[in-house]
Amino acid sequence: SDALVLEGLEKGYNHGRPSQVQVLRGASLSVAAGEVVALVAPSGAGKSTLLHIAGLLDTPDAGQVMLGGRAMTGLGDRAMTEARRGEVGFIYQFHHLLPEFTALENVVIPQLANGVDKAAAEARAMSLLDRVGVAGRAQHRPAAMSGGEQQRVAFCRALANEPRLLLADEPTGNLDPGTSDQVFGALMELVRATGMGALIATHNMELAARMDRVVRLEAGRVV
Ligand code: ADP
Ligand code: ADP
Image (cartoon, rainbow, N blue to C red; front, side, top):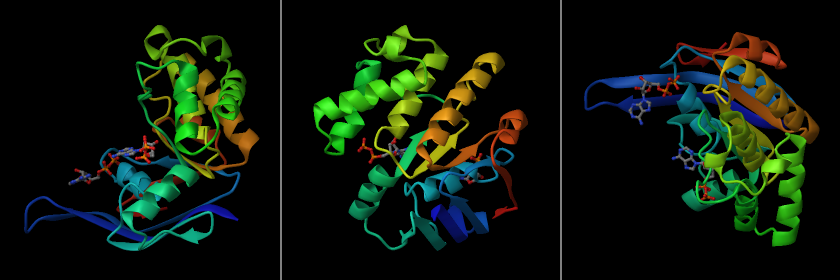
């Protein structure tokens, strides 16, 4: 089944009347379970808008969002937050780890918030950290880790609650090219091992070419 279906999304912003900026104009896209799709777009094309709508952080003016086969349009705020926590993992260009907590705690906390007991959460966190090669950093805080290590921990956090869909915005964009390549490899292994669907925005065409399919956001539509 499909991890994500976007159908005919419309989204505009009002920068003070009467000028309305129409960002999405009938954008449609689906991501199958286990499929990794690269989203390529020039700056300002509406990539963040599309990712926010797909991740239930924002609502479209028109169109349909389906996660794991379930229609999300018209849900209330509470149901949207719940669906987001259960179904979607986010990764950003900058890791946004909690600075006062260790790597392990950063991966454990979202699981506790999701009702997982502490022992199980720690075991899963260690296994994730191990799979991306940072188990040795489990007791370190983010400030004591390299940028690549921090980002690997952020991947583990995003996958901690076994989301069906991973959304990533330039996940290795702040790393130097060599590190970016390795860290991206770790992310792909993790995604492949879970069978989740992933939509990964990037400007890096070499990374895009390593994904299953490349789509482009152009004039408010996905082509
Ligand atoms: P990208 O991520 O591709 O750079 P965005 O989705 O961030 O593009 O933005 C697309 C357009 O929508 C831009 O013109 C931006 O100024 C506008 N925009 C984005 N978010 C908002 C907002 N919250 N309020 C008003 N305009 C916005
Ligand atoms: P929490 O469980 O901490 O309350 P939420 O349920 O609000 O988190 O959000 C779930 C995910 O959405 C988190 O990965 C968080 O980083 C992301 N998120 C929440 N709000 C925003 C936002 N305004 N912009 C970008 N990402 C957000």
